[in-house]
Image (tube, rainbow, N blue to C red):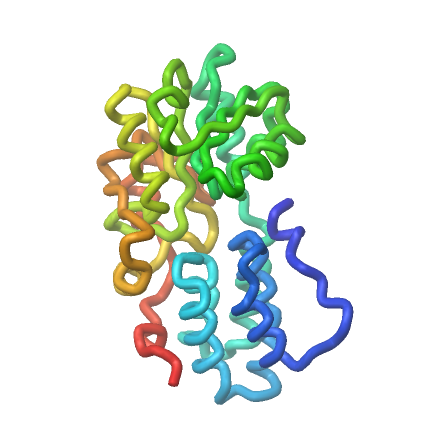
Length: 277
């Protein structure tokens, strides 16, 4: 999986606590790469200082409230009888996530012609999927500060990529084949996205343009944890209900939203609902 493979390589050894503090401060890495790096650090911490794992996991999710894969890694580790092995298995699942390839396949099977694909950013899995569809025409929708950088990323893997601000949503979806919205986190209640991406999704529905959600490994959480993410994140995010989507794409492929969003294997991990002391 390309984006997980982009996880930061630590060249100088550091204590796992220091490594986790560094991850907590990182604001530039993609969610999956952050989760992979965190899982490796938690694996080391579980071997060296098992009592510190709970506090470390709580601090991680407090620092990255809307990063679903971090909540998933933390929950997976905290309920496991062997946290070290659970963290290592989580790394394996994140690395081998087939969602991007399955999304590319679904786009190839469902879409005809050369109508553009509209992508709401951030969208790490969608970017990887587009690398498997070099002929695609992509309209990248993102906030102004990072729009040019997002367009460059997509332009490197597809034949044509253009940039649109969220305020241009109506123009962006006009004539589009599909709008893709990637989950920050998700659960049976729906898909959690930025408030701006939610407005783009509503614009797609108003224009009768198909709307697909993307929720790879680590994005579908237990509803208790999803509720905690929503409570802590505040007004910066919105929950799009399952009924708004035509399909949701995840590790099991293109599915009905209800089926895809009820498939999560994330445990509730009540320890994460308590904030770190």
